[in-house]
Structure formats: C-alpha cells, structure tokens
Amino acid sequence: MSTSNTDLLVVGSVAYDTVETPTTTAERILGGSGSFFSVAASYFCNPGVVAVVGDDFDPAHEALLRDAGVDLTGLQHEPGDTFFWHGRYDDNMMSRTSLVTELGVFADFRPHIPDTYIDTPYLFLANIAPELQLAVLEQVRGASFIGLDTMDFWINGNRDALHKALRRVDAVFINDEESELLTGHRNVRKAARDLQAMGPDTVVIKRGEHGAIMFSNQDIFYCPAFPLESVQDPTGAGDSFAGGFMGYLAETRDTRTANLRRAAAVGTVMASFAVEDFSLTGLQAAQRDTIIERFDALRTLTSIDNLAL
Ligand code: AMP
Image 1 (spheres, protein in one colour):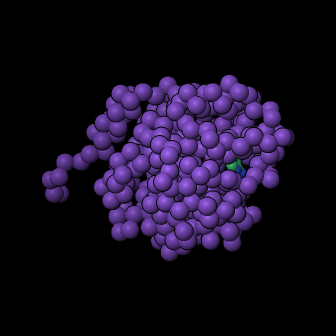
Image 2 (cartoon, protein in one colour):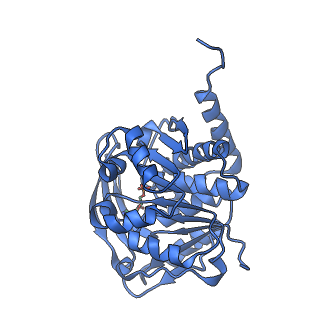
Image 3 (cartoon, protein in one colour):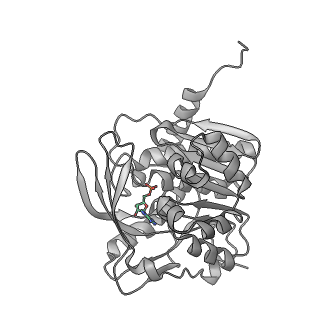
C-alpha cells in the first residue's frame, strides 16, 4: 500500500520560460506543464509532480511549488540546465510561436516514479516526450483514470510512440491545431471521433478563447472560456485546465459523464486564473471562494431555460 497521501500524479516539465506578449517580455520565469498543472490541481487534491530540473533551478521556485501544496518527492535534480522555452504571442494573443526549446536536463530525463506513488489513483501525462509517457505507464499500477496532453513538437517528432501511449489512456487534452495535425481533420467532431478510435473515451479539444469541447463516450459538452476583461499571458492555460479537471476528479472520485462536465467547467475556471498574470502568479491568486464564484458565473452564463422552441 502507498504511504503517500498524493492522489494525483503529474509527469511533466518544470521549466524556465521567456514569454513575449504584444506589450511585455518576461524573462526566465517559472513555467512548465508540470508546474501549471500541479498548482491548479492543488486547490482540489494532493498532487505530486515527477519532473527534472537542473542545477540552475532556484530553491525559491521549489519552495513556491511546495507552499502551494505540491508534493516534490519525485522532483529529480540533475547537473545541467533546466528546460527552457521561449514563446512569442501574436497581436491578438490567439496563436504563439515557439522561438526556442532547449531541453537541457530534460534530454536525458528518465522519469522515476517513487515507490510511494506507484498506486496513485489519478495520473496525468503532461506534455513531454511520448516515450517518457510510455515509460511512466510501465511503472504505475494503480491508476484508475489517466489523462494525457501533447503538442506539435511531439506529434511531428514521435508519432508512433504517441499512438502507443494514446491506446492506454482514458482522456486526451489537445488543442484544435494539434488535433488537426494528429487526425488530418479540421472539423472537431471528425477529429474527436478519430481520436476516440485511437484509445481514449474522453477527448477534450481546447480552442483558446473560444473554450473547450469535450467528447466523452456519446456525450458532447461545450464549455466557453470564462470571459475576462484582461488577459496578460496565455501560457499554461491548457495545463491549468487539465490540472483543474483532473484535480476535481481526484477530489470527487467520480468519472461519470455529469462529473466530467463539472470537471471541464472547473478546468475552464482554473485556466482563467492562470492567464490573468505571468508565470504561476494568476493561479496563486485564486482562492476557494473566487473559484466557486467563477464556477457559478460560468453556470449562469451558459444556462438556457428548458422551454421548447
Ligand atoms: P500551455 O500554454 O498550457 O501549452 O503550456 C505552456 C508550458 O509548456 C510552458 O510553461 C513551457 O515551459 C512548456 N513547454 C513548452 N514546450 C514544451 C515541450 N516541448 N515539452 C514540454 N513542455 C513544454
């Protein structure tokens, strides 16, 4: 039996990012799929992160994650540089270009799942090399619900391994451009049908400010993005969505369709906090009551009475 109280494990990147928006450039700020995911999830459950950092990783950043309630037993330290990513957003912040991806210690990362995590019930394979996602699947045995994220970098480079990983997960989180790249369909319904045929029963296609559409078995659920007056930095929106989604599932231990819909709304709310500031600052500013407030507002703005036309 596991002695850890970690109920959600994420394997992903802990990174330094330089982010350029039309108005601001923020250099070497804390980022990475594992960081955004785990801090978003920490509002609902006890997440643990498995990742690697280099000797340039600031202990203050480790403290920040720990103080947010993230278990760092699985954070490996290796000599070399922490993963570095530099991205630039276009004028309307709808799309971005990856200018630099320096893998650093990530290049030789062999995820090691500590013994205390082997039976963790919820698992998220964040955006990392599909071979590493497969290596994690070999080491865990207790996961009852597994989510996976990926991106163009890995779809283009490691498609076979990605297909193998997809066969073994319950849910995939992907944006519309990536789903087109993977399936050849721009139409989300066709793309989702093909993705479901690749393995996962649940497919969440994220469409930036246009929200997310979830296909789960026969159910289709559309959740608009939470309308914000100001978006500072979209980086980490997808990871925060997944962190809220999976964190809520780990808290409620219910993966039936109605609860998956609630999880998608929670994910939407956590993504809205993440984009209000750079790095993890927006997520850190969230509180249980402001999360509930936004969840309720989202419910109001999407509800239609049940009168027939
Ligand atoms: P998102 O905006 O949700 O897609 O996540 C952005 C985060 O992903 C940034 O903080 C980056 O550090 C991280 N990232 C970017 N490219 C990669 C990659 N190829 N592998 C793993 N993480 C990455």
